[in-house]
Length: 245
Image (cartoon, rainbow, N blue to C red):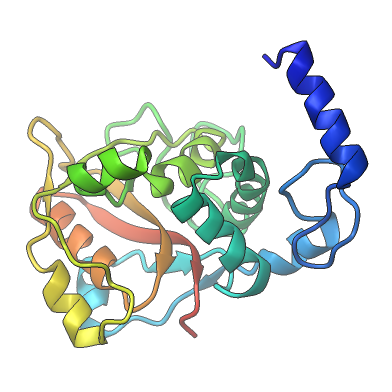
């Protein structure tokens, strides 16, 4: 709960610098969100094309909820690199709206059986109910950043669907930043980087691996490889954004 001084500071800030949509500049009531029109434009869920090897691990496909450009790219970067957790309100609205349009997922407060249109996922409470698994950071990177952006982005929206977030994966070795690497270099960089955490049972489960951004898919592929080896019944990936067509 905010203290009185914080409310006064927010009022002065809004008076001097009225909150504006980061895409179109229109006035908005909540700072660091998007206006309703821009939010609708940013929500562009689509199933991404995968090569044969990725399809063999990610048999449920990979969905991107938006295109990695313009306002979405800037907000994701500010969360990830500047620690702007105040952006999560708008990002959760964006992700929730995107998840609602992924056919394989249950609808919020849905019935106890069945899934979304065309889906076949079981619901929480059944042995093979889906679980969301965030792409993990190496412990050193997690300590430096203070949070896992993939977990922060997806935990609350998935909770609204009755899908628990389970930190089932761990990064067993540090990797170089993927930015600037070729597709082949990204793949080599990620090989053997992930393992299922001790004591985690994924046998027969439907696993949804989540990440903030997908470029070549090397990270998701290696995560899926580890999850598949742990006995998962099916695996899909969902990312907040991707520039992949």
